[in-house]
Amino acid sequence: MPVSPLAPAAQPDLPPIDGVRLAAAEAGIRYRGRKDLLLALFEPAATVAGVFTRSACPSAPVDWCRAHLAGGAARALVINSGNANAFTGMKGKAAVTATAAAAARAAGCRPEEVFLASTGVIGEPLDPAPFERELAGLAKRAAPHAYAEAAQAIMTTDTFPKQATRRVQLGECEVTINAIAKGAGMIAPDMATMLSFVFTDAAIEAAALQAALSAAVRPSFNAITIDSDTSTSDTVLAFATGAAGGTPIAAAGDRRLAAFRRALTALLTDLAQLVVRDGEGARKFVTVEVTGAKSAASARRIGLSIANSPLVKTAIAGEDANWGRVVMAVGKAGEPADRDRLAIWFGDIRVAVDGERDPAYDEGQVAAYMKASEIALKVDLGLGRGRATVWTCDLTHDYISINADYRS
Image (cartoon, rainbow, N blue to C red):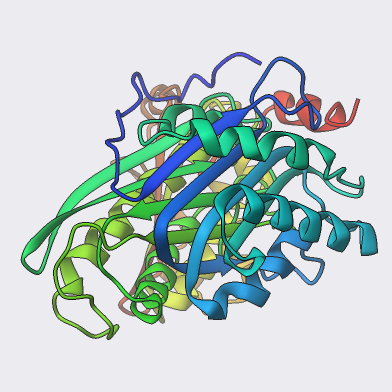
């Protein structure tokens, strides 16, 4: 597939992190001629935190990670693309057990210290043989600089890899945070919304890391939507090696964590927006800002009602400033709203106010704005102080083509 026109012009160069090594392989799980298997090793063990899908039909790897997250320690991470190992019954459970055992042998650890993630087609059994065949070799050639190939190995319908990095002061130490993500379709906020993996050399114990990750996911990955569909496999995992030194942070409320939490949230927001920029068939990146709502939660629900509306998204794809569809999406959201207090902007242009079209409305001016590749919609409800921002993309015929042919 051609690279999304909304892709960044350049990829960041992620620096090595002490205690993290990565390697990827062409295992032939579904794709040919591309890497589809990733192994990350943590030496010594890293603390681990995770956030997962709320789907009632989670994948076998999600079940595995949830069952072992309480242990708080990780020595290895195995990710495959092409097959989600979801809705695969006892075969799925057997596959994750066999994969964890193979990774444990390669890493010299216990299976309980191995974390797993899979992405791809739902309902097809996942053969563990490629993992058993490849993981020992991956462990031998794993390297600290391999983030670019790691980001490529977890892609499915993505058209470009997604990476981000930050450096931040944590107490007396400067620490690095690297992260990769994948996602282009089946994206809707419900705890995680796709796959993402965070690596840091910060000395943070598991409970504090979990609190930081959970808080960072809410305004980032939980503020994007491409098609309103939440995956069975959504997983965000964070690993902290502690190699930067300093006194380990154990309490979520430790003031030393404040800068780290801000940096983590900014990093995950970068990745979340990259996912939207790679939305299947996307041609326009859309920011939806809602202000004046009764509460932040109400603003978020109204924002998502707008961002998930096929009519709003197709109007944007057609470069049609159809603000009536925005009114519709506000009205159907089930949240407090007053038609006669509503105001709507496309960019800096106010198109509607006080329950009707803005008296200064100029169709030509707004039509010219709609030709841009980045579109901002703002809605003010005039009811309170609640506000929220969500990100989405337009809906084009290419989205239909990609998903109609996905298993072909």
